[in-house]
Image 1: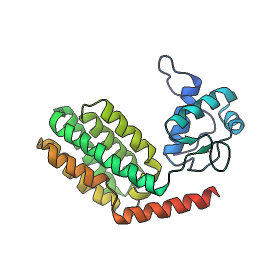
Image 2 (image 1 turned 180 degrees about the vertical axis):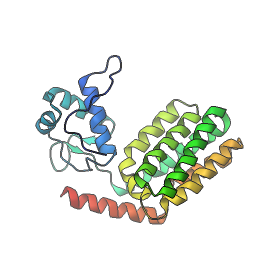
Image 3 (image 1 turned 90 degrees about the horizontal axis):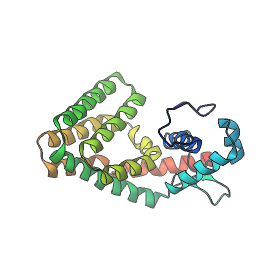
Image 4 (image 1 turned 90 degrees about the vertical axis):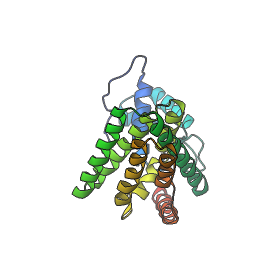
Length: 235
């Protein structure tokens, strides 16, 4: 994801403010890994970069702190992109596995034919992208598949909480996704989830989704390496 030189233009919804727009832009930079955990967030620097006053910057940072993406009182002093300790990160992945499992379970019971078709189309697209070797595109369409799964659950609170948690760990999930063989495994795991949903088998869908999201031993080792790399870079 390219780092913008100024606040990107976007259509504002009714009642949206400049701080809302800035919050969304900073959030995108954080969850995509452009702004890494531990990176300092100076109000004056951000105001100059995005050509805004410091007030919307301050409001945006407070809003991001409320979601856990920003630490207003970091150990290094000042405002930073939030870090997550390894034990908490593993717990977050474990919780995400359960909430994704529940989304898949409800999708197997409630998904419309149109929603099932959407999941199938994204699955086929991922298969083609992997064959073409376009790994960056694979990661983005993989996000679309999971969003379609949450939509197919036809829930409100559950889908919203699952999206929020996935967004919170997204920068760390990238390290797992790009490990050798992980994308090929994803195709098979998505296929198992999709098959269970098509068969209207909630139990199988739940188990397949948990198996897909749960961290294996090698994944945890990769995360440890990723956290060590980020600590070195931030220092």
